[in-house]
Amino acid sequence: MLRLTAEETARAVGGRVIFGDEKQVIAHISLDSRTAAKGDLFVPIIGERVDAHDFIGQVLKNGAAAVFTSRHQSREEAERAMAGQETGMSAKAEAAWIAVEDTRRALQALGSFLRSQNPIPLVGVTGSVGKTTTREMTAAALSAGFSVYKTPGNSNSQVGVPITLAEIPPEAQIGVIELGMSEPGEMTRIANIARVDCALITNIGVAHIEQLGSQENILREKLHIQDGMPADGPLFLNGDDPLLRTVHIPGRQIIFYGMGENCAYRGEELRVEGGQTAFTAVCGERRIPVRLQVMGSHMVQNALAALAAADYYGVDLEAAARELGGFTGYKGRQQILHIGGITVIDDSYNASPASMKAGIEVLHSLEGCRRKIAVLADMRELGPEAPAYHREVGAFAAGQNLDCLVLFGELAREIGTGVCGALEGVRMERNAWQDTSAEGSAHPPQIQLCKSLDEVKAWLDENLKEGDGVLFKGSNSMGLSQAVKHLLDRQKQEKKENE
Image (cartoon, rainbow, N blue to C red; front, side):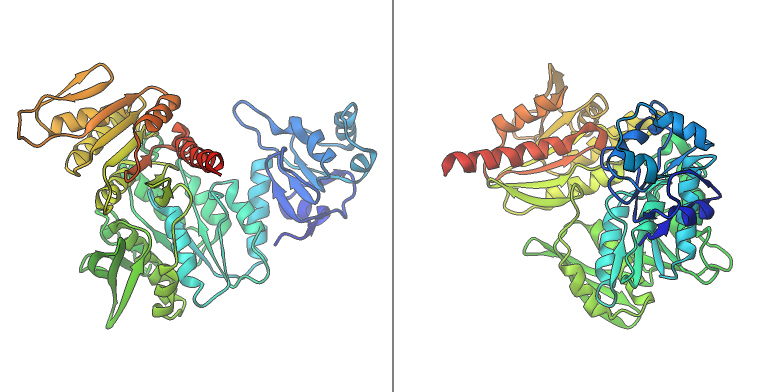
């Protein structure tokens, strides 16, 4: 847990206290001027459209202990900036201004310093799909033997990882840190800050391929999670992934997990029992029964990664499996909700072709549903091949016996095109694909196009019925989480009206 004076913080990042009380104690780091509070260090990040230095006055008014600044390099400049700001005299006199060359780099330097002061072992998690779920499942498995700290929320970026490291509490015995990247060189920067002791890589997909160019480039970037790792730290890789299973790094211990014979931690006897995913984890001579509350074969791979990490740190695998059995999912990531008699798979946080297929597969596997409906939105950052990736998802969906596809966005429209390509007797008419197949032939799902979230909500209100199962999946920027919230709010309103 962060507990430094402004003077110590300045020294750690190569900065200078140019104004205020250098003995101010910093307890937390904040990037958001709207939530910065008493005791916080405010780090103003300069973005493409907004320079957060403009909000220093606001955070001082809220009682921030200190601020980084690259805009002001002397006491006189800080005093001029304070003139006219609506802050109390105590804030003017006490808050420490720490001058640095670059606020983002200073934040990273602070994160690196905090890591050097904390010997806690850290497990790093990265991959194109499933990072957060694997992080949560790994933390659950490790909790059978340790007090575990894990990345809060989505703080897995160049600015998020330093904050994650600053929040490690003194009672934590081990940490699980999610590391994300979207551009060349980013993983190296993050990995050198976190300096994890071992790492899990879930898969190599096409997320961020627009910035990185190819899956091979994505693999190379992900493998930079080793930067900062000790030489004896193992890499746990998904042995079912076509690219990861070919990885060989001289001098680095590589341990595969998955369903294949090449995996040291292998899943066998995969089945669905009572709506739950069950399998046997095979680890050498040990066979451990595992039952998960989260559905899908990809969740078995995530669980095997978690068990591999737990075993590496000496956790009893049967105890770890019991903890995994209590995991119920993470908000917006294949979380199963029951709303007014409707089974909702909330997978709205983000999307890639692999994760969208996985979500559709889970919808297909739901038992006892009257109808199975997939609400799918655009998948972003897929580069020039984006339409083809969407058609690929449509072709997959065509074979999953779904009753209806609700498609939101111009790219999502290509999912419908993929369905058409896979099934005969389907044509476009206005805003929906119409079934014109011959009597008695296999019928495609009903397909509805929506141009806005309001249209999606209206369709749900008019068409969803008790007993339906519905999946929500799309890139976070498409806002499908608001459609899930709409259903929850509607249920609350109906309950209130019936009381």
